[in-house]
Amino acid sequence: MNMTQPFPAIPDSGRFPYQAIHQRPAYRWPNGARLAVYIGFNLEHFAFGAGLGACLGPASPQPDVLNYAWREYGNRVGAWRCLELFDQLALPTGAIINTALYDHCPELVEAFVRRGDELIAHGHSNALRQSDLSAEQELALLLGCRERIAQHSGVAPTGWLSPWIAESLSTPDLLTEAGYRYTLNWCHDDQPTRMSTRSGQTLWAVPYPQELNDIPMIMARQLDAKDFAQMIIDNFDEMRLQSAAQPLVMGIALHPYIVGQPYRLRHLRRALQHLCQARDAGDVWITTPGAICAHAEQVLNERLPAQAVVSGAIGPRITHSTAPSA
Image 1 (tube, rainbow, N blue to C red):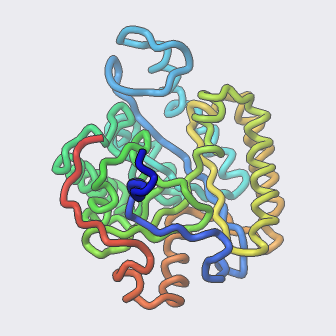
Image 2 (cartoon, rainbow, N blue to C red):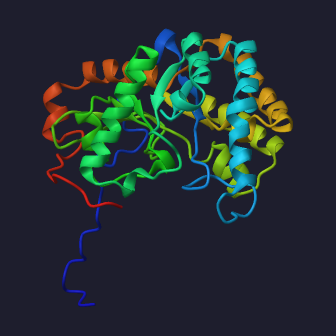
């Protein structure tokens, strides 16, 4: 390499600038809380005999009955056991739903609606990867999921999590154009972050965990349930200390076919009881991703002029029109 020449620029998402955690506007969550905590509860449906899916054992030629049946346990049993636990502890959830559930087990979605939980769009099925779609197909998916949830459950979702967190280069742009206010796809921060889009509209990134998440921890790294529960407790205790300096967000990502297994549920119960014991202290807000987004949007827009948001002070404008499939 000719060292007299400048190094080539490293590609960047262009969605947000770098900003260290201690260089942010000061604010608080409702009622003066410092740490916002939410449960992202993934309710998913998978195709039989085809497509993607998490695996308990080695994948077999289709129909892969072992892994399909294990995932289906979450909808038939595990989710209902988790619901009982959430009710016992008076915990709200962000229910992250595949719209295929309206065909397969609509009563499960309705149970979360009756609780007043937030519904977050999560594609049609986790057997499919969003980044394999064309721009037109991706926009149709985003619009279709939003419309179907509104039709069946009465409220259009404001948040999105892609199946397998798979994006195209245009996904943030398409999300705002389809009417979404925030995404859970990006796990780059402990606070809500403004993302720039080609329309000039802001898309909020609400922190969603890839560590405090039962799929990568229990399935990929084969962590025992008691250790995963201790991770939740340790993460909560440490972030509670850190939040004395600035408001933070802690998400817990759960899947009922994993944590709804009885021996894992016992340990999850212990971890969530620990969080609830701190709820009355006043510095912890147990809530939903949508409520976090709405509060951050309100307080940060009050502290920063609207012109700064669209001019690039929060993030550069994105000018590409469509993106190739990932």
